[in-house]
Amino acid sequence: MAQAAPDVVSAGAATHQLADRLRRDLAPDRIITDLTRLKAYECDAITGYRVVPALVALPETTAEVAAVVAACASARVPYVARGAGTGLSGGALPVADGVVISLARMRRILDIDVPNQRMTVEPGVTNADVTLAVTKYDLYFAPDPSSQTVCTIGGNIAENSGGAHCMKYGFTSNHVHAMTLVLPDASVVTVGGDGPDVVGPDLRGAVIGSEGTLAIATSITVRLLRRPESVRTLVADFTSPAAAGEAVSGIIAAGIIPAAVEMLDALAIEACEAAVHAGFSLDTAAALVVELDGPDHVCDEGFAEVQRICRAAGATGIRIATDAGERALIWKGRKAAFAAVGRISPDYFVQDGVIPRTRLGEVLARMQEMADEAGLRVANVFHAGDGNLHPLVLYNGATAGESERGEQLSSAIAELCVEMGGSITGEHGVGTDKACSMPKMFSEDDLAVMKRLRTAFDPNGISNPGKIFPTPRLCGERPGPYRVHPLEAAGLIERM
Image (tube, rainbow, N blue to C red; front, side, top):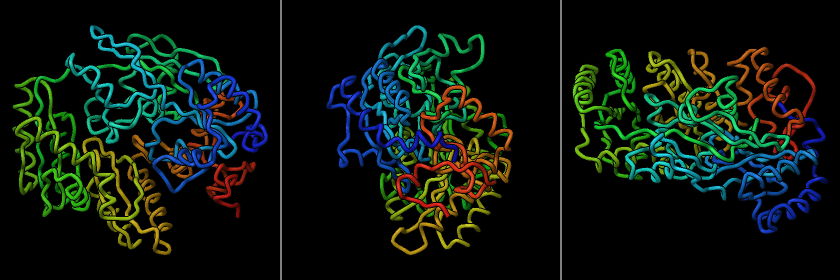
């Protein structure tokens, strides 16, 4: 993985002086150096990668974030911005001898502009709390990751998160007007504007999804939507995931744009029902959750057509949510899937890839073959409407070799998505976990252009180094200048 200059990652001595400086810039109790407390920041939701940082800073304002970044820049010490730690690609993995800048205390709602349907928040505000704050105005924030009750807007910005309703409403990038950013040289700038388009290069778009490698967002103005007049939700059961996939293709081919189309296979349903009791059928091979929203007459016509298409594709049963409570329970079951899988497997990898919708059945069949060859199980729960897969590779870390086989299978599935004309990631980012798969999707020229952009923002390579880009040798790529990887510096891996 691409890494900053060697003097950056070997900055252990500098961090002691840095801690003293930061205690003057911030209150002493907002600088953490105690090893026991530091271990709470050693990973995000990908717990297989762990690095204990040298210190953690807890700023509460843009000026304090800039002060921390300025101190890091002066000492050439790398830093990693962190939100709630719910990321699923190792994007917030600390750097050994580096600093974690936790934005968890920056959770104020700065402004609510109801007439213009905008809200300005700090990065530590949770996704769900944005909607909660404007429910009384009949407004809401459309992006809705499964972790929306705990994940933060800052993290959504970093990963360009989506969620179940991204098929119709798009990802975070479609719902952000402007951001205040702290750049790696500690300067504070604003990108974007009041409207959807601004004159000049789209720096707002460049930063969203850059995983904290270009800047830290400290104030974000998001777009709010009016609540739709009507919402219709159903769950359709099928004898196979392939049959459910056929229904998805039929719905899209009919010109219907659902708010969401989600698929769960039998393993995912088993886990969800054990955790939530949402009423999914346990004797079905696959279930589709389809939701339409909009004006009454449009929903009524489209909903009837969706039912007809599902039956034509072989649906064995259709359950229609009769009220808001039942609809909420269905979505509670779907969004509990990732955590619920822990009820049927002691360990699992969460994968994220994108394929063309028309190849859904083919890819699911191939994934099953790969799982059988590895001697492992794969539970599938995903955004079927836009082909964004989330296969969960189940394994037992206490069984010799299973962890390695699980990781290999997970990476192979991501690369299968590219082979099928898709992407190695849809909304979870690249981070540490998928950096070595980047050359499967991008050419050397592609990666070089990306690195040039990154260098333009961060010439010294101190902002979340070691993420996104593959490092030769450690990833088995073409030999080149050796750069120490954070995991190697932490003693978790070694060079062969």
